[in-house]
Length: 180
Image (tube, rainbow, N blue to C red; front, side, top):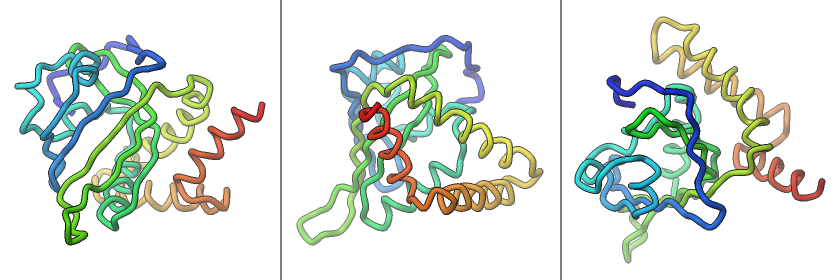
């Protein structure tokens, strides 16, 4: 997150048929951003390309979810996650992200591809309390590493109590909403 951008509490919503697409290198540096991403995040292409993807990180997003995401991607697996992002103008926007590793012809990971859709607001309301608890645990520790470790443990304990992986937890929210 850029320290000079403060959240203003205004939410921007993606259209139901819109998809935010971005690509990064192995270090999370943006190599591609589609027009929807540019519009929703309020950045020009020149402002995003070559910059770390965490430029749009919202301060309400727990670091442990990103650690889970990056660890899963580094292991060669895809991730589905609910994420709150921060636009350049201070607005926030929620997305259901699908992030995948990009492989070369030899099977080596060479980057990452993310497609983000408009999330179901009812599911976001179920995710927010979980994220708030994780973030509070991170902030409870004066040492950021200790906070991250504690929130990772809390996330693991929560998922264990649900008998689900993070992806299974996210999909259980989606499928239970569809069944209602």
